[in-house]
Length: 320
Image: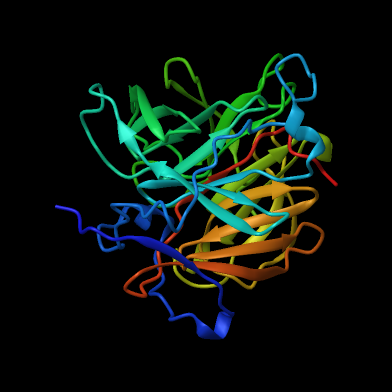
């Protein structure tokens, strides 16, 4: 049975954080993480306003003129909305699941398309997620030996798919915790198709996904991933910010070192990156050099850090 906890946010510096034991990306689903039952609505407002700047026809929505940003993030059992302009974090709700969900598990990542449709994965299941209630509607169990990706994003039309936006991610092979296989997920069926590999060859530096991926239309379809060298055995070293080719998943260049570890969620708004780490940190990331600044840390009432598992943002997010 899950423990019952309420949430609050604590602003703190890096020095004020209690260190967490390092873990591989596969440990996003560890049962040792604190739970987040019984959200205290008095301490975290749920935001249900219109979430995106354009509709499917490209027409501006009323909120487009407000300048407010919308970056979704999640712990293993709760969906949040981070507003980077004001630096506020709102609880949307705890994930709930329909009767078709038979396997259970933690939501390891989320992704949002251009018009606001959200999808999410556990290691074994694929869901559509309501962005106003956090209700998860089951689509599929995994259909291959590999797990569903825990680095997940939509990429713009004309990249991974020639005619439409595609949901992509980096998946492991047979649970080896080396997420390098670039895959596309059919949002209707959950079927997974291999599109490429993070490493374009077997020579030179070999990278793996260390957390998440994000792709933005207004930033010339640039696609960013947090990566590590494979030789770090999944626990050593800090996360690097890389640009990858959204067509085949290859690393194009390493932008810089974030000096942070286990950035499991990656978002973007107005030219800045936003990272969400297993240490509960919300980070602002300079997309030109990869440097990261700690903005907030998520903790529970007992003072324990709540690990982030993922993040997602519309591909229509502004670039400035």
